[in-house]
Image 1 (cartoon, each protein chain N blue to C red):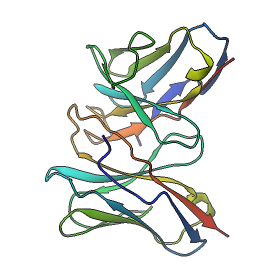
Image 2 (image 1 turned 45 degrees about the vertical axis):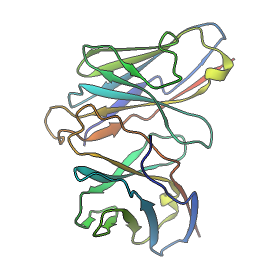
Image 3 (image 1 turned 90 degrees about the vertical axis):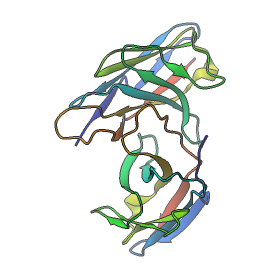
Image 4 (image 1 turned 180 degrees about the vertical axis):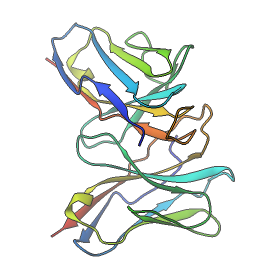
Length: 112
Length: 120
């Protein structure tokens, strides 16, 4: 079962920062927070992941609260191409045989 | 980066026929692959976990005799929809977990482009 909750939809003006929240209150100590996005009719694309420290890459920043029960994905300057469904997932990094399930995600609409 | 390729990307078939979808990891080895199904405007639903050299583990409510999964090598898993019917029309997506290979971190998960099945 999915272990995360996200708002179903959000709007963001083009050029502004998009902040997408995710609650994962039952996260285990060895589980990472992963973010993927899915542009219409394509497979999910990896964005970023983290354990407890904030992370940044060329696509986004990930802010994880100190208690690790929630996180925020930040797209610093949203463009129209960032319109997609964003999924927050918790899983162990090495994976093993842990299955990976998706919640409902947040549909981000970037508005011109 | 690591690439997962699905084939075909779209397929149309007649009701009652069987359709095979391939999922290949192109530059890494994957002992574990996942198959998902996605209906319009819905999230990805995990169908089964495919482990190389062993039987797949199916999620509750997924008919293993209808959705045959074979994972005979470290780079290939196949999903066969047997006796397809219009209600099987969906977007099928596979993902592969890196277990080895150059250029990818062990444990990382990569997704295919998806295969859209339309059953007439």
